[in-house]
Amino acid sequence: MAPCFSFVRRFVFVAVCLGAAAVSAEDRTTPIRIGVLAYRGSDEAHRDWRPTLEHLERALPQNKFHVETGSAAFLTAAVAAHRLDFIITNPGHFLDLKIDYSARALATEQDLAGPLPSESIGAAVFVKAPQAGIQGLADLRNTTVVATSPDAFGFRAVWRELQERGIDPFKNLSLTFVGFPVDEVIKAVRSGRAEAGIIRSCALETMIAESAVVRDEFRVVGRRQAGALGCEVSTRLYPGWPFVKVAQTSPAMASDVAKALLAMQPGADEKIWTQPDDYSSVQELDRVLKIGPYAPFRRLGLLDLLWENRLWAALAATAAAWWFVHAARVSYLVKKRTRELQKAHEAARIRGEQMEHTVRLSLMGEMASSLAHEINQPLAAILTYARGCERRIDGGADVEGVREAIGRIATQAERAGDIVRRMRDFSRKHASQQVPVDVSKVFRDAVALFEPTAKAAGIDVVADIPAHLPFVRADRLQLEEVVLNLLQNALDAVAAQGDRKIRLRVVADEMTIRISVTDNGPGLKPEVKEHLFEPFFTTKPNGLGLGLSLSQTIVEAHGGRLSADSGSQGGAVFGFYLPLIEKPVHV
Image (cartoon, rainbow, N blue to C red):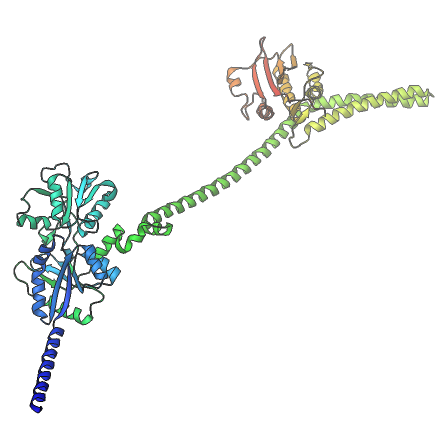
């Protein structure tokens, strides 16, 4: 029994040791899963990145590397399902993973003899070589264009260039997306299903080298300087593909892989890996296109819209502020000038009233001696009657005789008082006020006031004034002033004539009352008639030259017009009209 038990125990020990060794070997071969964006298919992706994978296997022998190829959407789903540790993809896809899944670039690809890492890839828009109608990107408007996917980095790069030329590819182009590989884009343009195609930079040159495309079969449009890239491009250049760590990958494993990548020694025509580049230019691309993390800004609110167009908003705000200041300044100037104009009008009105009063006093001065003589007559009669009454009383005359004499005294006193009243009313200064007046009475009072002057000059004034005339809205004293001015001018005109005549005539029709003053003087000379109503123009040696000017202003203020003309039988005719009011109002 003992030897048998000893044998069993040794067997168990050996089995345990072998099991432990197997477990240890399994721990040393940790699987690392790498996803690769296959823009030209799985086989091409394996060929492109085989040197990198072989280098990692040599540098990290304790790890086993597995490669999965596919589209950007496939790789994103694999990251979301935690089926990948690292990804090799284009910069646009990397930025989406960085925002959504906290991915981080460990290194950026670079050709030893090629461009800088920051200027490694772009996109090319190509057409058939004989296609002469499309020379630049702006010529793509309203054409049929084919691309792999709206998420492809090459399409996004072209999208930005088109947008800067005012072309929205989704509105102004007939777009078709054929999916990966990019060979399908070549086939679509070659067959005529599309006029232009969009592929990533250097893809066309690679296919020419592989004899998949005949040289000069296609032509790149909108070519830009590509520097050391060595390929024809239609867009800006952006950083190369990154080697990306996803969030769930352990820091230790990421550190080992990063060290291995940076220590890689490539062979001829192979890529190397450098420190991760700054992918801010790719972020700027997303911002301009409002995709990826900036997609919500495509549905802008008012504030977002203002911020997005802040330059134009600032210009508009500046223009609005300038217009507001300008409008406020203009409003202030208008109000200021209106006040000044009102003050000027008020000052002119006051000066006009003063001039009118001056003219009225001048008229009174010209008529003063005649009026004084006119007043003297009733005063002399009063004195005579008073002395006669005294004598009759002293002689014992009867009461009736004295009463008759006293009555005559009262009549003469009233006559004198009436003359004084008219003089006082005419000479006083008053505010103009137009009210309904009986023009028949106004004109008769004016003639009565002028009669003493006319009698003193030996001139008879014939007044043809109807007893009843319609009412007009007027200032009584101003109308009297106009009539007296015309009568006084007529008196001056006939002063040197042998047979001196003045006639005032008033007629009424359905709409107006017309007044005319006619004299038989020498008439109006053409040069005098031309300046007759100008202020300070006069033919009198001591005249003010204001009478006719003010009379015209007064008549026009009453809605009428003053005119002057030569009479049919010589002399002059001055006349004016006044509009009637609708209904006579007795005052």
